[in-house]
Image: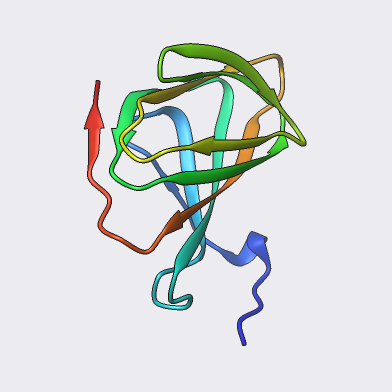
Length: 116
């Protein structure tokens, strides 16, 4: 069994993003099939257009952002679910005056990230 308070988990800044950080909530060492991560992108922040070699399942906890997936732009907000297939380019740009926070689940496979 694993129970941990999110406030006790270290947040690591992301070098590719502007004002972006990640917490590894459930690591591949704990769960055999999926990792659970929490991302925060600060107001005015962004993550560049990129691809991952693994799929992403996301749930938006807070805020809103312009999300571009495979060239299609949508506004994602708290309560939205997002699926990004492996190899599909995507980016995030926070809109409004609130941080954008989301859970992101990924399979425990090697993930190659490429900037587009």
